[in-house]
Image (cartoon, rainbow, N blue to C red; front, side, top):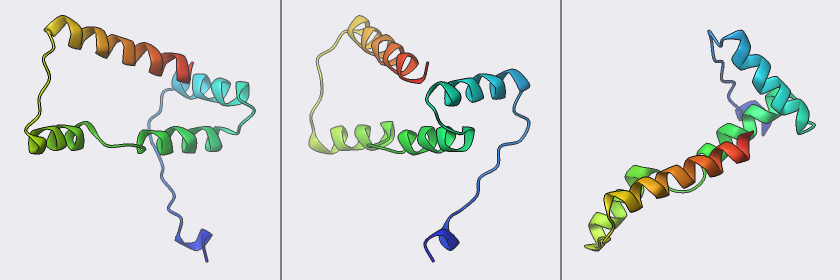
Length: 87
């Protein structure tokens, strides 16, 4: 019964080079492309969304004292971390 409730997701018009890179990354991890993509999609849903975080912060009346440079550096650091994770 568990598998009967699972949903199939299909993505169309994926460029060949993107598919090839994803397949190579999956192979490097010893996974099928299907398992690798499921892991990526699942990871993207973990934790609160940016909107949820914003709403929590707004509701708490809290704020932060950060400069634009601090914010941009945090964004860049997060992107580097994500790139390293999926490379």
